[in-house]
Image (cartoon, rainbow, N blue to C red; front, side, top):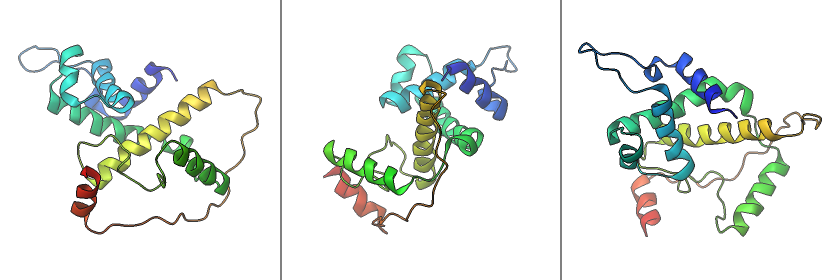
Length: 173
């Protein structure tokens, strides 16, 4: 998954990621800096203020880059790289996560890099990670291997918590 492929697609979709010159003649942040800051937060869980040390981007700008980048990845690549999991996929993921100490990880938002707790933002971040994972798989897979079409998957039994404050307190504990 070439970085430039993602950067170009996101830049063409959202002009926020296009470098510009302001009224004083100062050059704004480059596409690569903005996207690198967002991808490092997603890949390594780096805090937003850490981007200032190596990319020279402020914390609030890094957070905005992450939010817009995640949303743009979903809007640009979702149609190609997302599909409903098959029952076999769900079973395999649940078994793997159980072995790694994350039982019931599907449908759980407390296993994501999350500074903001807004449901839509978490959805975009998690979905963007899934899309980029699928892009890596596509880039590295054997081209001769057949791809199985998506099958109807049963709706997973997910516990819905109505009071997010209680869920957050349980997570902190």
